[in-house]
Amino acid sequence: MSVKLEDVLKDENLVKNIQEIAKDTALLHGVLMRTKETPNSSDVVSYAPFTLFPTPVPTALFHQALAVQTHFNRLVDRVSQDPTFLEETLASTIKVDDFTARLFSIYKQVQQEHPHQSIVLGLNRSDYMLDHRPDGGTSLKQIEINTIAASFGGLASRTPDVHRHILKVANLPEECNRVLDNNPAAGLARGLAKAWELYGSERAVVMFLVEDVQRNIYDHRYVENELWKRNIPVIRRQFEDVCRTGSLDQSKRLFVDGREIAIVYFRNGYMPQNYTSEKSWEARLMMERSLAVKCPDISTHLAGTKKVQQELARPGVLERFFSDEPEAVAQIRATFAGLYTLDMGEEGDKTVAMALANPDQYVLKPQREGGGNNIYGNEICEVLENLKNSSERTAYILMDKIQPVPVQNYLLRAGAPLRLNSCLSELGVFGAYVRKGKDMVFNECVGHLLRTKSSEHADGGVAAGVAVLDNPLLV
Image (cartoon, rainbow, N blue to C red; front, side, top):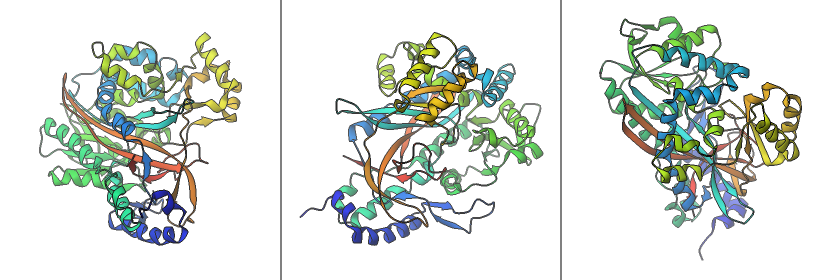
C-alpha cells in the first residue's frame, strides 16, 4: 500500500521519530545558523529553522516563476539606467521618506561624476505567493523584488538533500524525485566571478559588506566558498572598517585595509538602522564613487523600491523598457498583483478610500526591506486615517493582499515544541546578471528558495524569526 504525505503528517509517533533524524540531517548538510546575537559566536551554532516536509507547489507555476526571471533581471537593469524614470517616480517619496532621500542624494551626486564603472552586477530575488482566485484557480503573484542583500541563496543550496532524506525515512521515495536540485550559491558566485574577471585585476578582492552581528553567516559562507574555489579572494568588512581604512586613488580605485576592491557585495545597508552614524553614509558615498563594481550600485538599489514596483504596474510603463518585446511584457505583467499609488491628488485619494472601505483586502507597504515592515487590517485604517490628508502618505504604496491556500506542516526550530501548523509559503527566485557597457554578458535564473510560516503571522522572514526554510514539492 502506498503511503501519502497527508497520512504521514497525521502520524504523531512517526513524526516524532523523523523530527530527530531531520535535525541531525540538517546539521550534517550544513543548514546552519548562529544561535546568539553576539559577535564571534561561531561556537554557538544550531540548525537553521526549516519545515519537516517539503511543501506542495504546482509545477506549472513554479516553472513560470523561473522562466520570467531573466526578464526581471533585464527590467531591473533598464530601470536603473533610466534617470528620468527614477527621478519622476521617486519625486514624491523622497520628500517624505528620509532614508530613500539619502540614497537618492548619493545617486544624484554619483551621476554627476566621471568616470563611471561600466561593469554592472545584479544579484536579486523575486518573491511570489500563490493567489487563490474566486473562480477556484491559482495564479503566481509577485510580492516584491529584492535588489540588495537578497539572502538564503547559500542555505537554500543545502536543503534539498535534507528533505529528500526525510522523505525516504518517511517511506515516501517517489516524492524524493519531486524535490529538485537547487544551488543558488554557485549561481550567485558565477555572477560575482564574471564581474571580478571583467574588473581585470587578479590582486583585487571581493568585499562582502556585512553587519557586526551576523546570525546568518553560513548563508554568506557558501557563496564565499564558491568564490574561493575559483581562486577569487574574499574579505568581510563593515561600514566602520571602510570609514577607517577606505580610500580612493587618483583613478578612483577603492582600497580598504590596503587591498584593492574589485566588487563591493552589499549584505548590509538596506535599512536605516544599518547606517549607525554620518560616517556610514560617507562610506557608502565613497564606495559608490569608486571604480569598484557595486552589487548593487545605488541606482539598482533604488530600482528595487516599492514605489518603483508600483509605478511599473501602471498600464503602458513596462512597454517603456521593452518597446519591441510584447512577450516579455506579458510574462512580467502576468505576475503583478494590484498596486496603487498614494500620491497626493485624485488617484491617491481613491486609493485611500478603497483601503479604508476594505482594509483586509490590501497590504500597506513602506519603502523598506528586511521583513516585518508591512501593515495589515485595522492598522491600515489607523495609519491612513492619520495620514489621508498629509503628503506623508506618499511614503507608502498599497497592494492587493494575496490570498494563498494554507497547507499543513511542522516547523522545526531549535528549542520550540513540535506542532502541526497551518502554513503559508513564499517562493523566491534568484537572478544574476552582469552588463559591460551596453552588452549584457551574463543573465541567468540561478535557483530558488521556499520560505514557509505559520498562517497566524502576517509578515516576516527567516532572519526575522517568523518564516523557516522549505523546498517545493512539485505537484
